[in-house]
Amino acid sequence: WALVNNGMNSADKFYGIFMIIIISLITISISPLPLFAAAVYGIWKRRPNFLLTLAIYMWIAFIVS
Image (tube, rainbow, N blue to C red; front, side):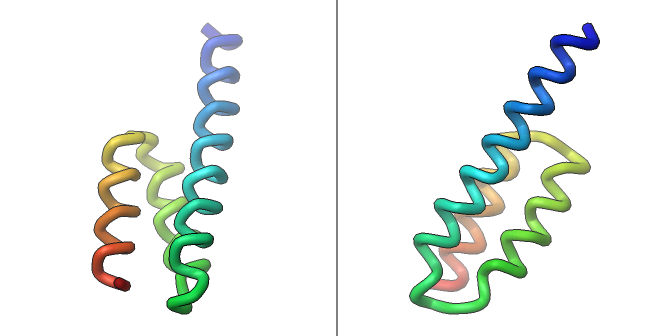
């Protein structure tokens, strides 16, 4: 279980960074998304639900755009 948890944590970090990079590239021309991405990443680290995180990212991108 320890190995599985460590592997999942690594995958969570990878997906979180990956999503932040994607959302930053999408919104870098618009403006202040690094702060939003950091806030969402903090929420996401507390509650690692990938679909929920994806929905939040899509919602923020929709609102900003």
